[in-house]
Length: 222
Ligand code: DX5
Ligand code: ZN
Image 1 (spheres, rainbow, N blue to C red):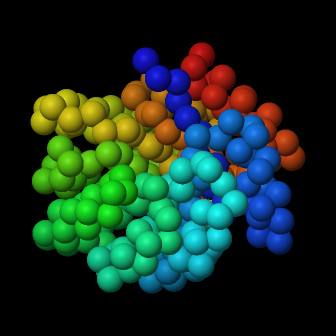
Image 2 (tube, rainbow, N blue to C red):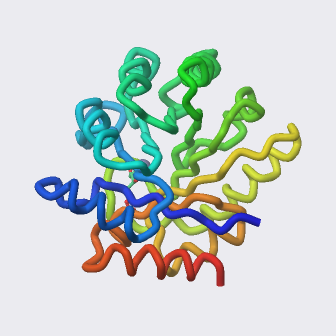
């Protein structure tokens, strides 16, 4: 049994004091830094990209968990792999046909951990062709695009379904849940089998992010 890890999303950090915020979550025991890359096309919002990943790599030892919410991920994957991402998540909706398999291969050839994600209305079954190869599955519990949204009720059932699907092929990828996770929702997804909890507003948006990490971790274990 492994305790859940928290992956604070820096989308809710203070960009003018990003290094300070990174140090705070690192000291607070965060397991990963969650980097939300949005291209204004796959999702309506536009956030950060390769230059930010490169600079984060220089200032932290926490693994960089890069969540690519971009169209045509195959075109840009090499840049993020070079920039120092430790885990890269590609959306199934942005990688049709064999592109998802190709993406996982590209990520692994760079010695990086590969994850795939599904939006709330996409069935997890679309991940079946790559399930046995994945290091992590990211279940979106809000429509990707913005932090601060409410957890979509019942998303924990999708987490449980990933556990089943993975078991069926003898795989045990980490399961990460992203969107509206805080002290109220962490217990639901942790009970369903989540290993990594992304927290934007609940941690980076909190007055005391280190205390928030402890509170969410505790809630998840209760
Ligand atoms: C949403 C992003 C999330 C978001 C989480 O598209 O993928 O990582 O920043 O923010 P909260 O925890 O506030 O929902
Ligand atoms: Zn995210």
